[in-house]
Image 1: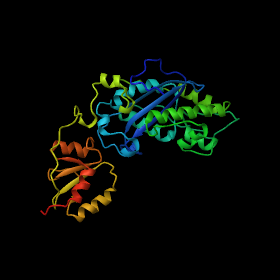
Image 2: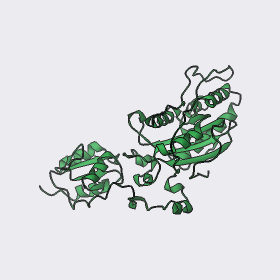
Image 3: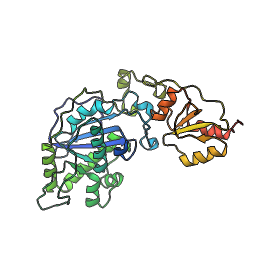
Image 4: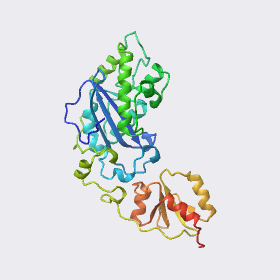
Length: 341
């Protein structure tokens, strides 16, 4: 697997499959969860891999389960926003069957991201005849396929890891978008070999090839893989930065945190922390510190799962010159005791 840091200049709209995986801030894009990484693998109708690409996607919000996807706010600092990749991504997807492991989720993410820009993209499940048919003719207008669903029907298992294990497919960097997309592409190739005569392949390919994609306007931004996928040349070319020390696009520095907490302090929590939020509320209340729901000028500090976060609370804290600390700082501060008011 050789990720490309640049948008491909190859011909687009070719008949075949586009395997896609998103890493996201959460599971409900209709309620504001966002894509923060995408991996794309293009295959011809026979399952031969033609091209791969990936990029992080910059969003100005909390990043959700960072222990799962391992993406830090600093990693996204120089990444393109979705509007910067929308045109190139359209070139990758137009004319191809959209494939994902749990395509219902990834297609929702895709549609929501394009909808934010005012576009309706033709990636959808069948409007009729949702049956999995081996021998009968298939009348299917679906432009997407789900390898998880196929795994349940062909293998009796649905998880990506279990499906891949059946064929000896490795995925050493799970929950990395391109690694998951690459493993899914190899899985799709195995399914093509298992049931080469299934009429659904041709039906999906035909539907996708003729699906009317909107013209996407705007510039094409440089795609930027996560730091572990960039070689030294690319890092130098990009004027690469040292993770959290980079502040090129930061709202501002925040002041140093206080030496100790005081009884009566108001603090705000932001992000998904290792300790449950309800437990933090109880622990802090026990020492006389209040967890406040929003950032005001009376808040003493903000505790973030990721101190570089661009969540609304963190951006407001920077505007008010309120310190932002991590969960480790808070844990130590509580252990050291709280000063009387």
